[in-house]
Length: 635
Figure 1: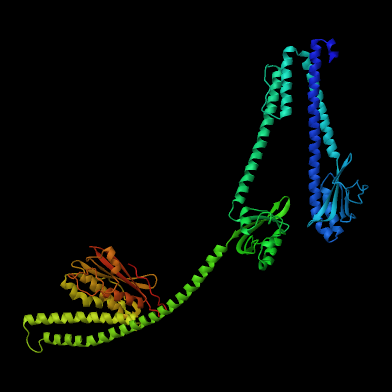
Figure 2: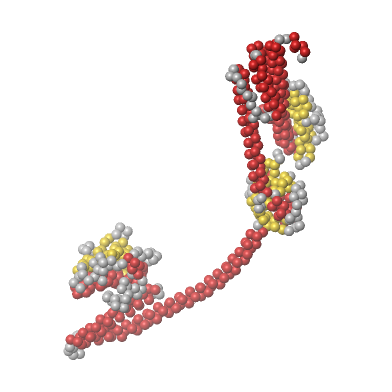
């Protein structure tokens, strides 16, 4: 640089500054121009490679079936690609199979596939790829791409670079005119920092701002640019780290899974995890690249191959099924397979999860064995129960026959006792003194009580044995109620109770008169028995559902809530102690419940302890033999 000695320091500084600026701008201009050129060319090559690969894949079937028309139609779809001007398909022998040319480009011919993948001249790029099916080359696909857009982009990039270069030089020239030695050092420092960043790619470096003028602003702009570059670089690194962590996570998940996991492609193992290696009882090298059917039981191969082919063809089938896996040493393992279609290294593949279910199958077999044995035991036990049930039915029938026979035999002497006691009380055999009359009345009362008990037992026995016969007839219900009141009036008068019935019109129903009277006598008699003062009232009401209800209401002792459920059980009374105040066998309500079932009616109880009770039963106007389902009894 001896020729600079004749220039002044100011001129030297300007020349040096312009030279440095020129060098920096030229370096970055060339760098960005080359980068843009490579970027655009790489983008075009990727786009053209994708188009070529996709078109070649679509043409496999046309080459198989030698369908030139279909091949030409496939090529004609490239019309939508603006920059694709020509396309050719050659067969495996290099003979032209089909071609396509955009309007204005028909003169260019390609009689045989080129030897190179890429062929580039000034304005066009030709890409050629073999069409491979099942590892066999069945043809070639070639596409000619118009580089006009590429050239235009490069030209614009050159213009922009030149514009930036000229603007930079002009700015440098203007700045150089006003620079002094005091500003040369910051510029040199800035240049030094930029070179360091350029060589080390360390975007954390920053130039030191020494002034607040344009040089300071330039320093700030460079810092901002470096900040943006650093942010993008950091985001890129974070994305790379996240991708790496994701890969590590799924790799660990797959490699540590208890189930065997494999990727099948072209019918062979492409990847296997350690669990599958352990299941197959061999090394990973003995699995990779080996046909998977070698590890399937012979009788299961047709089924597994059918599932595999259908899944590879895109057909919707069940992804989970059971099969029999064969280890390297020939051991058979029951397995559950869960498979799905994936893309592996750019090609269709099958992701398969294999679970060893041999233990589960053995448990299921044992359970089936126990279940079959249990069914045999249940069958035997059922037969025994049927025999026992028949025996119980026979015993129940014999019990009913015994009760009926004994009740009949007991009633005959009781009737005689009652009759002769009545004769004696009438003093037809002679005059009796007061003590004799008292004793005879006690005999007569006890005999009648015993006769009622026997009659109740006989009725229950007939009902339970299914031998009771109803005497269905039309009768006036009001008359029956008044008849019951007349018979119970003396008993109510002895306890000074008011016995009454509501006034209603004549009500005719079709039912068993004697049984209805028996129920009403039982309910009203109980009300009188358990009422020491007050009244007993009978209410008759017509219901909307063609039923009639009879309610017996008293002001007696009432019933405790926890004892209401005992009412309709046999031989149950509220006071079951040995010193109970009220006499009775506890069969009346139980018998009433049974009779109501036969008459297709219902019976209800509503009571408050110490305030009285209400017993209500309902009857249909007309007894229907078909309506024989038992009704629920409400408490």
